[in-house]
Length: 334
Image (cartoon, rainbow, N blue to C red; front, side):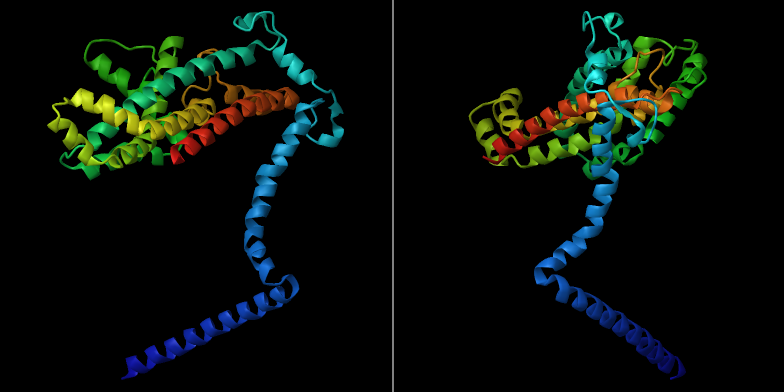
């Protein structure tokens, strides 16, 4: 009986607190509603997100435009001089764009060339591995749910953690070289040779991100009616004909969206590279975002104008890719 009376007291106490809180909210929002009206209440709830967006996204974007058209080393915009398009002219002053050594900002064009190669190779391998994995996981195999979780798990890791883990595995005294030495093969310069570094950067990024695109393609595969495959088998079509005439055409809208998403993400690659190779050896894995970071933050002579101009060039590319994604989604909806 004593415990029951205590329970009732606690319920009465917390119930009174809850009632007081609700009454306080009623008074607060009631007074605001009198000022803004019913239509103004939704804006009150959106206001915190708008403030965060304005402070951390919109204001830096505007500031970036200011930096792109001003010069000097000062961080404060009012202490920078207007230079017009000279930062862009500095980036695009080049005798031959295919030869970075002939450009005024040779590091920028090396980063552009490296990014183009990285994007092409990474997107092809990402689509290939993701499609193969999705086709396997779409079959009725044992522990299918477990394998889906396993393939998606790397996407949950921080890119910095992924880069550091693979750096530990592939460094000169890392785990993989330790295994190769134990087998009598000898150490390999995985992160010292330029070609090896480019190869591993692509493979690590594919490993870290393919689970996300695998799930998207898997969802597209599962939306294809099974009746079509049954009808094709009755007509005598083999697996290849069913894949080429049923799977790929019906999967193509999803595939287009995945391709655009991988392109956008590949152009923006930074975190894994920053932790994995740091842009090295030399400039072998120097990509656009790494170039912008180096010029704007890592260099002792910070050149905010050049970095901002380079970021606007990259932003224009991303806008084109985003418009392509929207067009692909519009066609998919039709």
